[in-house]
Length: 389
Image (tube, rainbow, N blue to C red; front, side, top):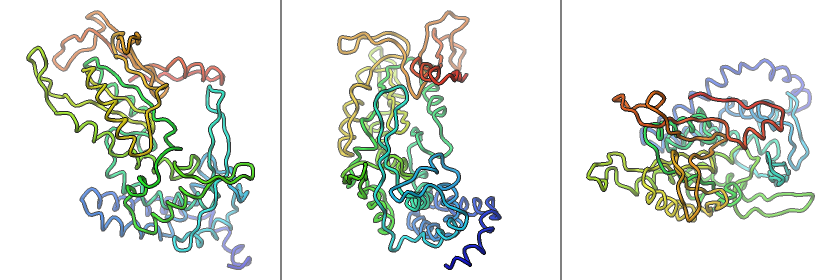
């Protein structure tokens, strides 16, 4: 494309009907989602190929990366921080799967909130980020039709507050034991072979994903190979992490029977544990302490095949209502999750939560900002926000 033709088409970027672009892309994504839901994955993969060639999808991917995303001004190894309208239009014609080759990532160190340590991000080039956004637009509806109902992190239409609300519904009517755990270095340790075998996409898409996983990192001019993990800073990395962790919840929950008779002769009609996951953080809820211990062991075994493990320093077993002794140590009631403190408090009959039959439970569940979150907010001179569920 000549400079004259580029300059001639420059105004076109600012006059694009973005509502139409989004509508066309969303319609195709919906067809992919519905095809997977109906069990027709062959049709879904054909629609994915159509989406990857779509002019509208390419326009939307470029807009998200160069104009909408928070890190749009962060440069990769090529040093490009922004694109002019004519350069964006030119990039549309360069987004092809055939012949595409990813460049190395640029290492950027950023401080963790409330901690002295820093986190390393691998920043792809502008073109690589746009290509990731395009591939993600095709993969996301395919996997959203399959993801588990109680996983919430990095999914469209789901937020941390949805995860907190789900926890509330589980413990509001019955106090439970809690396994509060975190996966150690989740984004850095995911096994590439396991992830690529699980992605379930065409050869061309899988080839490009493998490039993004294996492209290496440049840190102050020193090149390092990436043998495991998904690059933090990549547009598609959260989706790949969710794909790698997909199945953990269902596999663990289905290990237990639906009903079981209690020692007092009554029947527990909902014996399966509840697992709520937000990215690499998750909680397991159940009224039986032994089930919590079994879940911890089963999850550790499941994560091992993905190349991951539970982080001991961030793993805690407690109870939502009462202080309990775990491994010889007293654990206070309640737990912190996603910046909130979740705990049930003993109450009198006038303040107690009630069952559907208006029976007093003797406790009430409250959710409020955690102390750690409050301190972080105060350090930013920004008052915390309280959510009333």
